[in-house]
Image (cartoon, rainbow, N blue to C red; front, side):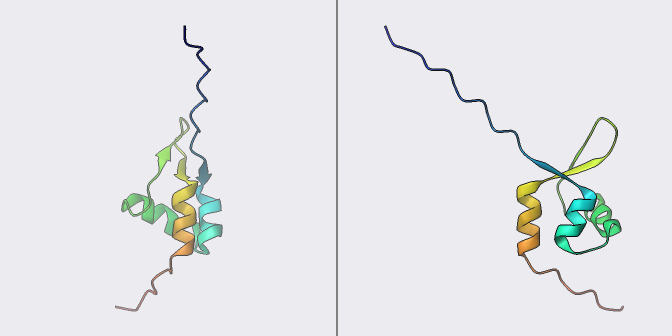
Length: 72
């Protein structure tokens, strides 16, 4: 008979609050909410309605250059 080993629990994704995302990306928190509304930044809502973004996505965002905004 084969011996069965317990499976390791799946790793839970780490989510970050919008204020922390803003601090990491060095932008204003309002920009983070705009990115979330435009679907530029993936997020999930908590039961209380707060946004949380995946930590891996946030760190990728921080590594990429932020485009400059020009006057229209």
